[in-house]
Length: 195
Image (cartoon, helix red, strand yellow):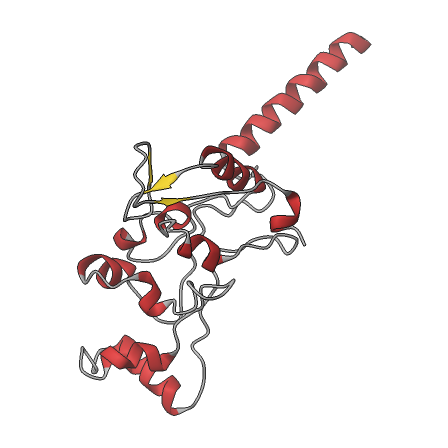
């Protein structure tokens, strides 16, 4: 077999191999866990809570508007409602038992950033950015999944797209300028997210 034929076969194998990896979804950008949907210790439905019952995200994620992290609800937070609402449900019993034992619920983190990136929830929440912008339509999810890639590219793209955006009451960008609306001043300076 000639050297030229070996080169062609080598290139073909490489291209076919890359296509197979790409088509299986295993070839992803660093940090891209979109679609990640782990089982949780409590079968919690965002569809029931945020969707059917219209509970605001910040009721459970209490530090989203005051801290860098959104926070995971404590068992006490859950039992504020579930002392009365479905207290005998097996899932609520798990929360009740954790509370009695003074043990935290060991939730599995779904949305995560690389260690070298810093995201501040309070800046985004207080600017009026809708949680669904990054987290997707959680009010439709029985089990939460990571919807965004959370890559540097997706963050920078959003910051560039909405550099002087005006948001409506739901935190969605609008084109009509109105003096009663919040105007965002986003930055693409590296030090904003990497410090």
